Length: 373
Image (cartoon, rainbow, N blue to C red):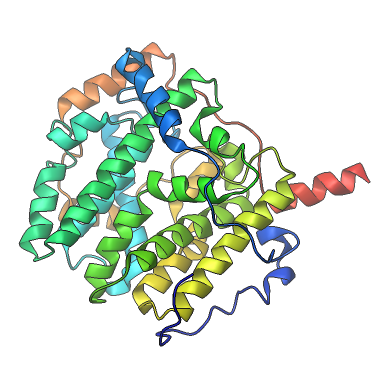
């Protein structure tokens, strides 16, 4: 529990005391005392998945398409990931979103490993480059901005994300759709799923760079963890309410418990984290970052594309901005060749595992309950 501090921002209007009014966000509203403790040891699950990769399973998924929008090339996957980067950055930072280009390249690398299965060693060695930028060159640029140990935190968080992303893709393919998410959701509580979700999306590392670009000054580890987790959960709650998860292979709110109860617990953790940030005096930039997922799911093409199951074409102004801030060639030819080989070999390019069809939106829970009665 963070110590009280001098609040820097007002408490969210959407909070523990108003949650019961919004059924789509958690059914019964806020659940007091939702546990924030680990119940599952992640390391054996990771070691098992990475053991499969070392035994040869990785070759079957390296540079495969996990964006699942029918992209014709790895370059398209990468370009759309950079589009998403600009839109996230604008939600987090407003008109300051492009002030530090290396920050955008960092967030783009965090995004592309979600959509394209990049082997972690390719990422950290520089064999994989995004618009000509390697992880090493991006971190060096952040150090050149005077970020020092913050650049190291960002680097290590990105490496962790790449390992988690790769492990869950290997595990998902081998387990026929079960994967790490489902196994973490096998516990009574939701804390393990929340923490893993935050690290596998690198919300922690992106929070570090948000704080730097915002100029918050020194921040606590607790603020970075709380805001990163809240950002991931707010996004997932909004995706669930808008039924975006109907087509997602990984659903953090899914699990053996009744869907409404699990979603309520997930939602309650978010409300506790946001209240803790405000109560302990976290800076406005990080509190806003924690809440931001409730905004960008509605605004960004990335999430509407998931509902449509196909891409929304890049608008000319966005294409021009991408060229200005990133460059002309999203990935190198070797990456494109491996992407096409997998796509053509799979007979059309749908990813391993495919959509689950198990939508977790509260609207579906209500409809099902009404049908049953």
